Image (tube, rainbow, N blue to C red; front, top):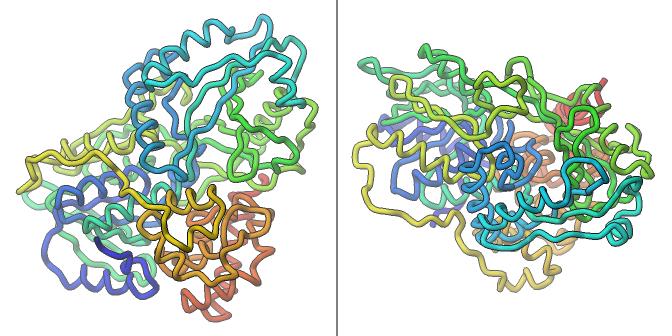
Length: 532
């Protein structure tokens, strides 16, 4: 089992030197460090293939850190007739909950029923009967009006007849990416962030590798590969376009807002049909906060910049939450943070982005294998389909069957874990897997306490800074931890406590710290706050 030395303070430069100095091709070059790329790298490395994953931004920088955090089967996809996607998603959801408790956990969902409004109790329960059948477990149950109102006193009450509770799952999407990448590392894969593709290399009319550029130093070098896999999601058309591939991606923006749980406490994820367009939108608990989202709008193209919530989207989400919970009287002043991501939908000519299917597609352009679409939940299945498409290009591809388990089992018997509450022990094992023991050994005694107002321990910041390929402050606060989404001003009120951790683990001097805090402040202000 490998360590994650490649992600340590000096590890990146050593990895880049090895890559520059070697003329040997890798078997699989994966472009894209989101959940799809991570899943492909994990399955390729498991098969003994020499695997390199590169990401021009940070790992999970794009869609995979800015989703709704839901590992769900896609109930509305089944209602639309997409039975195959739902069946596969439910099976994968159940698998992930069993393999990675603490990282992927069950969450109850609630659909409130109102007299004369869709969906009615009986029709909805018929849909859930099939949903639970796919899961092999009965999660659904009806909650009468009195009980539902007692559980949620701020709920809209006129016409309320009760609610149906069912189950899906929730995760920290960026941490899911990091855990999958660590599993890939353990099987020998190399994963490097801030390493982008300048151009594809071709030989005899076929893609044979890529020219890569370190976005930190600007240095460029060639990386030959038996097969190149384009797993850049919403950006997939960019690479395909260099080979004449037809444009297939319909980027769709989804935005969310975060409010204090004290302002609107919910234990279940409420599925609410928006009064304006009848789209299902969620109001759900996450990391000790309440989140409202998501919107679903055509993004009008794609760029290398982040995206942020618009005023129209903010108004849309506030209308939704006050429609379902009018007594809460939620306003823009209650919003702690926002986030927006771009989904890589495969265009089919549907009238709106909401109507597009969520299954994935794979293309082969002169040997470049591209994949886009799909769901967070089914990343393992997507990876297997991609490798099947790439198999003919890889000499020596193993014929034997391999285990289906994504994650290495982790014991909670570590003595230092016993100092933590059970929920925190489970979270640590889920989030950090094989790194639990070194993380705890690396922690200072006073750091096994949470950052005030969150469930994040100070020890997690120290570990991430020193051992998880952090190059910028936003890597640490928006993706390795989620403090930037959970605290006002992106968590900068704790700058005085975070600074020494970064300086000790990353070697930043005072000037670099000032540069990073200014960069982070601009990112938070432009993309994770209120519009304008």
